[in-house]
Image 1 (cartoon, one colour):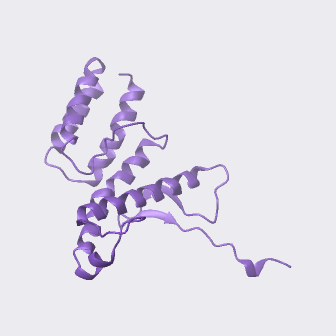
Image 2 (image 1 turned 60 degrees about the horizontal axis):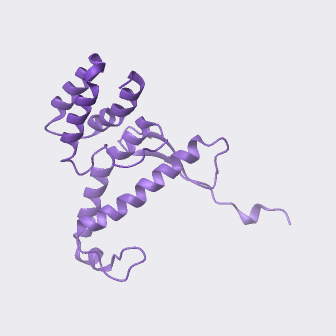
Image 3 (image 1 turned 90 degrees about the vertical axis):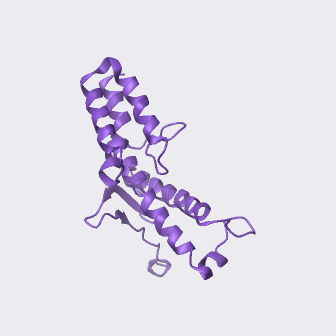
Length: 172
């Protein structure tokens, strides 16, 4: 594995570790250090890291085609999954909230808070990715939110809301 590919591969993991706690963090950090110094065995170190993250719900390692978004920004986005889903699950446990919340496009209630939080996270993740793509666009759409890929001092995403087109300001 080349140096560039190694850095691209481990960056989401490094960013995730900065924002999340896990009992195997020292092991992952040691495997990354070994990979930094041993290009021949990097694939083996990466497979070990992947195996460890296979047990994590909000793993920064995803299956399928990789996104073209900067890996550090994706790491920041993925670091929000655990706390966001936990907050959704807490809200869902309120009897009134849980009994009135329906999945989009369906006519039955959510089966549990896990299903609800997963749906909500998918929506928020998509919004963050779209807002980041708008941020890096050659000509950002000012009517849509932008996200620069960073967290503020409170650990919250630095999202700038879009501005509504004001029909009253048009000259007729």
